[in-house]
Structures are given as C-alpha cells and as structure tokens.
Amino acid sequence: MAWLRIDRYFYGDVDNPNTVYQPMLCQHCDNAPCENVCPVNATNHSSEGLNQMIYNRCIGTRYCANNCPYKVRRFNWLDYTKADIFYENEPGLQEGNKFSTIGNEDTLFGNDPLTRMVLNPDVTVRSRGVIEKCSFCVQRIQAGKLTSKVEGRKLKDEDVATACQAACPTNAIVFGDMNDKDNILNKVKNSPLTFIALEETNVRSSVSYSMKVNNRNEKFDV
Image: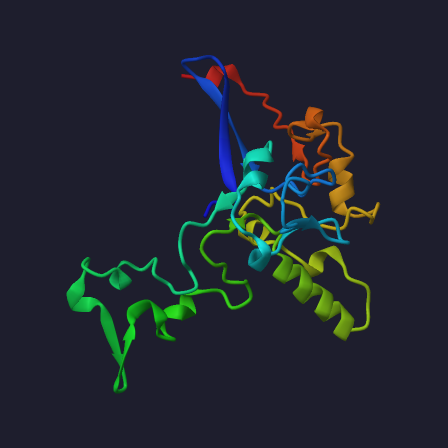
C-alpha cells in the first residue's frame, strides 16, 4: 500500500542527465475533488484541515481515486483484519504449515496474537474493499495533542513528526501548523523556490515542494 511514492524526473543532457525526486502523497487539498464525488461521504475535511477517510463508511466505489489529480489513493484488495495476506493462511499453498499450535488450541497462523503483533496498534486496521491514503499520521498528531494537554501548554510543531519526516535522513520533510506564521514551515513555504504541484487545478493543496538548485561544475562530468 504505497501511501507515499517517490516520482523521479530527469532533465538536461540525455547522456548525463540530472535527476530530481519528488515524494508524492495525499496533498490534503482544501478544495479536494475527491470529497464531493464520494456518495457516502467516506472522505471528508476535518476541522484541522486534514482530508480524512472513514474506513467503515467506505463502500469501495473508487470514485475518489478516479477524481484525484495526484493519483495518491490506493484501493485495499487485501484483508488485513483476518491477516489472510500471509500465504500460510491460503489453503493449498502450504498445507503442512497452515496451523500454529498455541497451547492446546490450533489457530490460523495469521490470527494468533504473536503474528498480529506486526500490526501497528496505533493505526486502524482497514477491511478489504476500502480506499486508503496518507493521513498525515493522524495518530501521531493526536498523541502530540494529548501530550501537550497533559502538560498544560499549547501544541508545538516539534511535538508531532510524521513517519516519513522521522525516517528521512536528510530532513527534507517539514511538518507543522500553517497558522503559526513564525514557524519553520511557513518560512519554507514563503520561499521563492517553493511551488505547489498541479497548482493550475485549483485544489489548494496543503503540501508544497522546494525546487532543487543545481550549480554543477562541469569539469567533474565524465
């Protein structure tokens, strides 16, 4: 389930091109074209500006995926709830290892507690037949809000880090409150090098990108 994909673009000399990478995820548009085509309002806008999915309301029409200009929504063909994505659960594929014994009880391999520990308990387990997408790690946002509430202070940008932001070794991803005009996020967004992907569609994306500036010394080119 590619909630975030990396698009590659090449430019310059054909024999020695430059390469740029663009992470493409749900843009959490303020004028989201996916929201107004859902017949059951499974995708909607939260008060915090997130484009959110209500999984148990989704009936899998895939209208939203068809209407998304960024193509960042994914249809779940697999049943993660019953864990039948594990091939040991598929009859006939590995009959000898279909069951695992826990005490005196035979349990399907993917349904025993030890195997299900691979699933993140902080993230809702989706059922088969629903649309999934990036949620801006809403579970991390909620954890940061609860921490700041317990400590009796205002939520700060450093209280929340999305999974992609925490995993990025070059700190290329910045996440924060767009209403805080003095934070790092708004300084980056106000840079003349910042642009919005497919801005001409007027979806008013919440995600912006910084252009890469190359000033290569051609003496080192082979």
